[in-house]
Picture 1 (cartoon, one colour):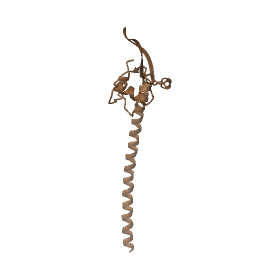
Picture 2 (picture 1 turned 180 degrees about the horizontal axis):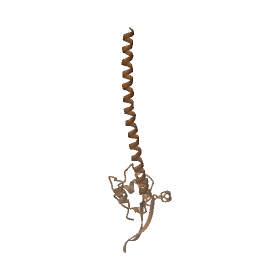
Picture 3 (picture 1 turned 45 degrees about the vertical axis):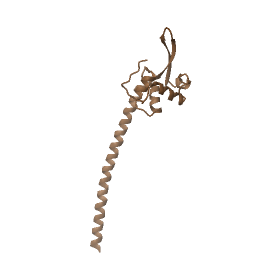
Picture 4 (picture 1 turned 60 degrees about the horizontal axis):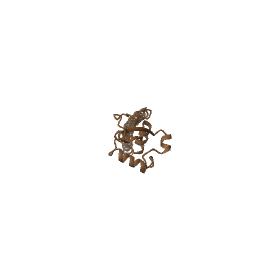
Length: 145
Protein backbone atom coordinates (compact mmCIF):
# COMPACT_ATOMS: atom_id res chain seq x y z
CA UNK A 1 0.00 0.00 0.00
CA UNK A 2 2.84 2.41 0.80
CA UNK A 3 4.32 1.97 -2.69
CA UNK A 4 0.92 2.63 -4.25
CA UNK A 5 0.49 5.76 -2.11
CA UNK A 6 3.93 7.08 -3.13
CA UNK A 7 3.03 6.51 -6.79
CA UNK A 8 -0.23 8.42 -6.34
CA UNK A 9 1.59 11.24 -4.54
CA UNK A 10 4.15 11.50 -7.36
CA UNK A 11 1.38 11.64 -9.96
CA UNK A 12 -0.41 14.28 -7.93
CA UNK A 13 2.73 16.43 -7.61
CA UNK A 14 3.50 16.01 -11.31
CA UNK A 15 -0.01 17.18 -12.18
CA UNK A 16 0.32 20.05 -9.72
CA UNK A 17 3.66 21.10 -11.27
CA UNK A 18 2.14 20.94 -14.78
CA UNK A 19 -0.81 23.05 -13.62
CA UNK A 20 1.54 25.66 -12.11
CA UNK A 21 3.46 25.88 -15.41
CA UNK A 22 0.22 26.26 -17.37
CA UNK A 23 -0.89 29.00 -14.99
CA UNK A 24 2.41 30.86 -15.52
CA UNK A 25 1.81 30.79 -19.28
CA UNK A 26 -1.76 32.04 -18.81
CA UNK A 27 -0.58 34.80 -16.46
CA UNK A 28 2.09 35.91 -18.94
CA UNK A 29 -0.48 35.99 -21.76
CA UNK A 30 -2.92 37.96 -19.58
CA UNK A 31 -0.24 40.48 -18.66
CA UNK A 32 0.76 40.86 -22.32
CA UNK A 33 -2.89 41.49 -23.34
CA UNK A 34 -3.39 44.01 -20.54
CA UNK A 35 -0.29 45.91 -21.64
CA UNK A 36 -1.37 45.79 -25.29
CA UNK A 37 -4.90 47.01 -24.54
CA UNK A 38 -3.65 49.71 -22.17
CA UNK A 39 -1.34 51.00 -24.91
CA UNK A 40 -4.19 50.99 -27.43
CA UNK A 41 -6.39 52.98 -25.05
CA UNK A 42 -3.59 55.53 -24.51
CA UNK A 43 -3.12 55.92 -28.27
CA UNK A 44 -6.87 56.38 -28.77
CA UNK A 45 -7.11 58.92 -25.95
CA UNK A 46 -4.18 60.86 -27.41
CA UNK A 47 -5.86 60.93 -30.84
CA UNK A 48 -9.18 62.04 -29.33
CA UNK A 49 -7.50 64.79 -27.32
CA UNK A 50 -5.67 66.00 -30.44
CA UNK A 51 -8.96 66.14 -32.35
CA UNK A 52 -10.81 67.78 -29.47
CA UNK A 53 -8.14 70.48 -29.18
CA UNK A 54 -8.32 71.26 -32.90
CA UNK A 55 -8.99 74.82 -33.95
CA UNK A 56 -11.25 74.16 -36.93
CA UNK A 57 -14.88 73.19 -37.10
CA UNK A 58 -16.61 70.56 -39.21
CA UNK A 59 -19.69 70.98 -41.34
CA UNK A 60 -22.36 68.37 -40.63
CA UNK A 61 -21.44 66.64 -43.88
CA UNK A 62 -17.78 66.46 -42.83
CA UNK A 63 -18.82 65.27 -39.36
CA UNK A 64 -20.90 62.43 -40.84
CA UNK A 65 -17.94 61.41 -43.01
CA UNK A 66 -15.42 61.74 -40.17
CA UNK A 67 -17.60 59.52 -37.97
CA UNK A 68 -17.93 56.98 -40.81
CA UNK A 69 -21.71 57.06 -40.42
CA UNK A 70 -23.72 55.10 -43.01
CA UNK A 71 -25.68 58.28 -43.87
CA UNK A 72 -25.10 61.93 -44.62
CA UNK A 73 -25.76 65.28 -43.06
CA UNK A 74 -29.56 65.29 -43.46
CA UNK A 75 -29.99 62.10 -41.43
CA UNK A 76 -27.37 63.29 -38.95
CA UNK A 77 -29.35 66.51 -38.44
CA UNK A 78 -32.53 64.44 -38.00
CA UNK A 79 -30.89 62.10 -35.48
CA UNK A 80 -29.48 65.01 -33.49
CA UNK A 81 -32.92 66.64 -33.38
CA UNK A 82 -34.40 63.34 -32.19
CA UNK A 83 -31.72 63.11 -29.47
CA UNK A 84 -32.58 66.72 -28.57
CA UNK A 85 -29.04 67.88 -29.23
CA UNK A 86 -30.32 70.29 -31.90
CA UNK A 87 -33.43 72.45 -32.04
CA UNK A 88 -36.03 72.01 -34.80
CA UNK A 89 -34.26 74.68 -36.90
CA UNK A 90 -31.00 72.64 -36.66
CA UNK A 91 -29.40 75.13 -34.32
CA UNK A 92 -27.68 73.56 -31.32
CA UNK A 93 -29.27 73.66 -27.89
CA UNK A 94 -27.68 76.34 -25.72
CA UNK A 95 -26.04 73.77 -23.43
CA UNK A 96 -24.34 72.23 -26.47
CA UNK A 97 -22.88 75.61 -27.42
CA UNK A 98 -21.86 76.26 -23.79
CA UNK A 99 -20.11 72.88 -23.62
CA UNK A 100 -18.16 73.70 -26.80
CA UNK A 101 -19.60 70.91 -28.95
CA UNK A 102 -21.16 73.15 -31.58
CA UNK A 103 -20.71 76.62 -33.00
CA UNK A 104 -23.08 78.71 -35.11
CA UNK A 105 -21.69 81.03 -37.77
CA UNK A 106 -23.42 83.24 -40.30
CA UNK A 107 -22.51 82.37 -43.88
CA UNK A 108 -23.26 84.43 -46.94
CA UNK A 109 -24.95 82.17 -49.52
CA UNK A 110 -25.54 84.41 -52.54
CA UNK A 111 -27.19 87.75 -53.28
CA UNK A 112 -30.67 86.22 -53.68
CA UNK A 113 -30.61 84.22 -50.45
CA UNK A 114 -28.36 86.45 -48.37
CA UNK A 115 -26.93 85.20 -45.09
CA UNK A 116 -28.06 82.31 -42.95
CA UNK A 117 -26.86 80.69 -39.72
CA UNK A 118 -24.92 77.44 -40.12
CA UNK A 119 -24.35 74.88 -37.36
CA UNK A 120 -20.78 73.58 -37.18
CA UNK A 121 -19.29 70.79 -35.08
CA UNK A 122 -16.16 71.62 -33.09
CA UNK A 123 -13.34 69.13 -32.57
CA UNK A 124 -14.63 68.57 -29.05
CA UNK A 125 -18.11 68.08 -30.52
CA UNK A 126 -16.81 65.47 -32.95
CA UNK A 127 -15.43 63.46 -30.02
CA UNK A 128 -18.79 63.92 -28.23
CA UNK A 129 -20.68 62.64 -31.29
CA UNK A 130 -18.27 59.70 -31.70
CA UNK A 131 -19.10 58.62 -28.15
CA UNK A 132 -22.83 59.24 -28.65
CA UNK A 133 -22.97 57.19 -31.88
CA UNK A 134 -20.30 54.68 -30.79
CA UNK A 135 -18.26 55.55 -33.86
CA UNK A 136 -14.60 55.83 -34.76
CA UNK A 137 -13.19 59.08 -36.07
CA UNK A 138 -11.54 59.15 -39.48
CA UNK A 139 -8.67 61.58 -38.89
CA UNK A 140 -8.14 62.04 -42.63
CA UNK A 141 -11.29 64.21 -42.71
CA UNK A 142 -10.02 67.66 -41.83
CA UNK A 143 -12.14 70.60 -40.70
CA UNK A 144 -12.36 73.47 -43.14
CA UNK A 145 -14.57 75.91 -41.30
